[in-house]
Image (cartoon, rainbow, N blue to C red; front, side):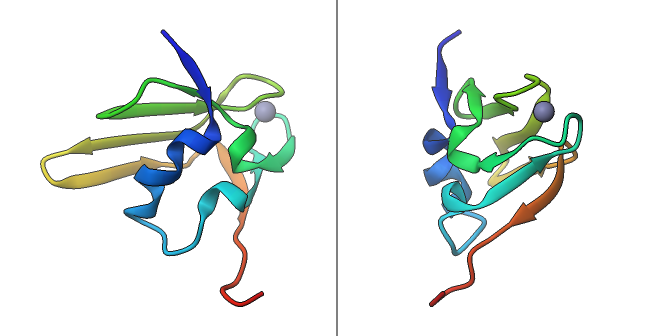
Length: 87
Ligand SMILES: [Zn+2]
C-alpha cells in the first residue's frame, strides 16, 4: 500500500472543516508527539484513509466516505489546534 503524507487529506477534510486542517497541529493521544497535520503518515485513499503518527505510528485519524457522508474518527488525537480565520 502506498503511503502519502497528511497533505493528501486536504481535499477530504475540506468537506468537513472550513479552515485548512493540514496547517493545524495535533497532539498524539498515544505518545504525546505534536506536529502539523500535514506530517501525518497517510495510508489508503477514498473511500477510507488512515493517518498515523510519524513518531509512534499509531492511528491518529481515520476518515471514511460512504453513503453520502463522511465518518471521521479522531480518537487518536489528544488535542487539535486549528488556526482562527483571519489570524
Ligand atoms: Zn504518536
